[in-house]
Image (cartoon, rainbow, N blue to C red; front, side):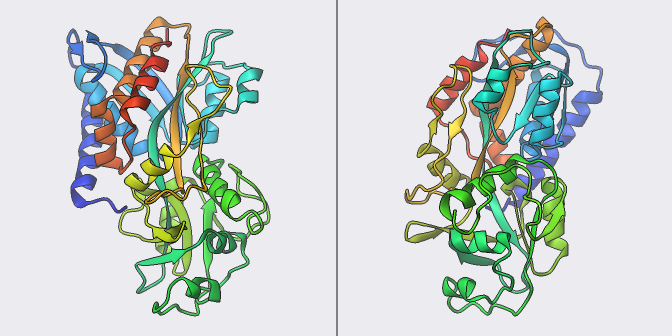
Length: 368
C-alpha cells in the first residue's frame, strides 16, 4: 500500500504535535481519556522506550494523542531496531521496548528483565500490525507478480538478473531488462528481517535454507543498510535494487505482489489483517503475553502473509509507580480504537480487532 498525500501530511502533523507538546511547559490537572478505559488523572514524568523502527511513525502518532491529555508527560522513543530495544529492556536501560518479534518462551524463562521489579512477568501487546513491502527499483516497472520461491531465490542470490525466466514466468507482457539484481537487506538485528525470512523459510525452505533470522546470514549476497530508512534509501538510490521494508516507509516505490493460493496479492493493511486472522496466539504464554504464531502459508482470499506484528513490551510490575502509570496509559492509548485509527492513517497499519483490543486491555491492566 502506498501512503496518500493526506496520510503523509497526517504523519507530519503527528510529529509536529509531538515536538510542540514535548517542548511546551503546559499545566497539568486535566483528565486522560484512554479511548476504551476509564478516565484517570493526567500523568507527568518521562517514559523511555527503544526498539523497532517499523513502529516509529505509529509511536509518534500515539505520543501526540497521549500528550493531548497528558501535556506534562514526555514519551521518548529511539527506533534503534527490535533487537537493540529488547536488549536495552533486558538491561534496564529503557522502560519499554518495541519489537517486531516477541520474546521467546525460553528467553522469558531465563528472566533478568532489568526494567522490571525482580521476579516480575512481562506484558507483550500486539499494538502494530503492518505489511512488509517488497520494494524494487527497475525503471519503467511499477509492480511485479512473484511467487515465494522466486523471491527467496532473489534474496538467496540464485536469481541474479531481472529478466530471469523465473521472474518472466509470472509477468507475461512485462518488458524485463537484462539488469543485475541488487538485493538490499538490514545490517542491524531486525524484527522486520525476522518476519521477512520467516515468510521465505515457511514457503520456500528448499531455496531459503537459513530459517527465520533477525540478523542477515553471513555470506548471503546483497547490500547491507541500517534500519528501515536505510533499506528504503538504498533501494531508491540503486537501479536494479530490491529490498523489504515496513509499508509505512515504502510510499511511492514499486512493489511486489506475492502469490497466495492461485492469486497475487499486493501489500495492504487489509491483507495483513486477513493473514493475522488466520493466525493464533502461541500456546504456553501467560495472559499478559499476547505473542502470535503467524501462519505464513495461509491461502485465505486476500491475505498478505508478508507482514509483521510489532509488540509494545513492558513490565507487569515496575519499581517506580509513576513509570508504571505512564506505561499503562501509553499502551492503552496505542491499542484504543482512536489510537489504532491514528496509526492506520499515519503509518498504513492494520487496526487490531475488537476482540484483540479486549485481550490487550486485559493484559495492560496487569501493569502496576
